[in-house]
Length: 262
Image (cartoon, rainbow, N blue to C red; front, side, top):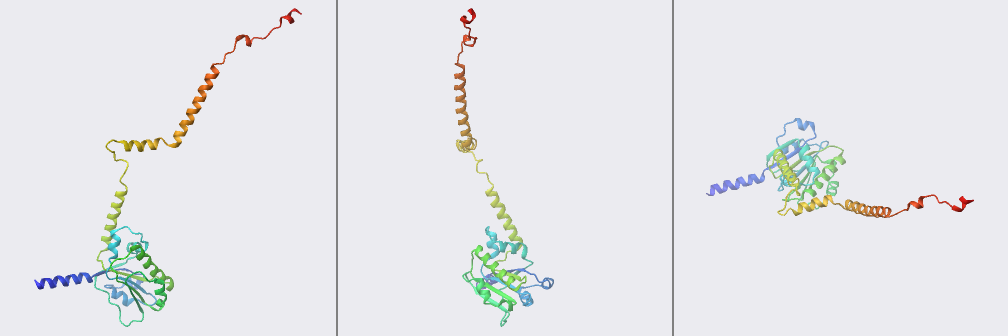
């Protein structure tokens, strides 16, 4: 029993240490080469073609994105169009020792301004800019803006498209991510597209009220009221005209008998 417990513990440690690197390579020489691990990419990074590593030792970035609909343009663009290599089942990344061209900054919360950090790092002399995020969970919108600020600053400061490695604690593949996103989107669309006014109450009064409110609008009621008033005025006018009487003698030409005698 103790032997089985030890094996189970070892398996848990191995699974906990496993991670996935989602790599976005811009250097064609690196793309054409054989890349089997993130260490290979770190070794091939140069000052002219630098590398940005975004490492999450505990957080599961891809699974967090697939679980909910976030407004995260940078991460969505990265995972859907930027990733060129996926290195699965990687062990914990080991930072190079005694390498002055590798800048490493460890952080747990997003409490430091990334611009202040990068300005003090002399990134123009670094071939690797490495951010280690040690928290288990992050606000995905804040994280998206944070990562975008890092990448944009390095690329604009160095005037070069950098290679990016996002190493995450989850082991989700991009295919699983796309399937989860499509399923979540379909469910969200189906729920929002359900008609709310087609349900008929037991007495049917709610549907009738809605129908009447759509037909008998304020404009229609005002038109009907004005039409009724004009109709009443017309009826009174016709009645008044019809009540007038003119004698036939009033229409005859008057004659003066005295003029005839003359």
